[in-house]
Image 1 (cartoon, rainbow, N blue to C red):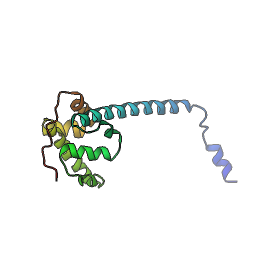
Image 2: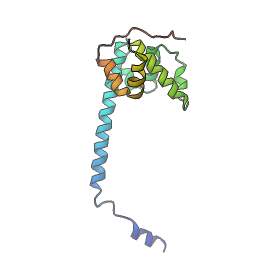
Image 3: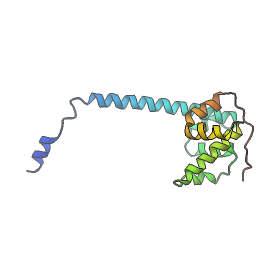
Length: 138
């Protein structure tokens, strides 16, 4: 008996639901485009550093490759899974990555840490050359 009033209060999702489907489709297309831009930038950065470009597509392995390019030890990858510590690690890797491509630490913080899709495009498709890691790998 208590279900009848609840059924009367429910809205019919079949009427006017097309807008939500359209918005979801547009959101999906935008997110796919952002993903493609990120992968293209990372692919070029990896290739410039002498690493396989396809590694940009593999989660976790791409972070391992970034650690190698930046000259950080492989065990730092484990620190990427710790909350709050991962922010510090990404910050340090971004600055080391910028230095490995002859850019300043400020470029690393602003473009590779805060605006990473744009920063990876600038490094990957720009005139930056890989000069090697700024730190010695442990």
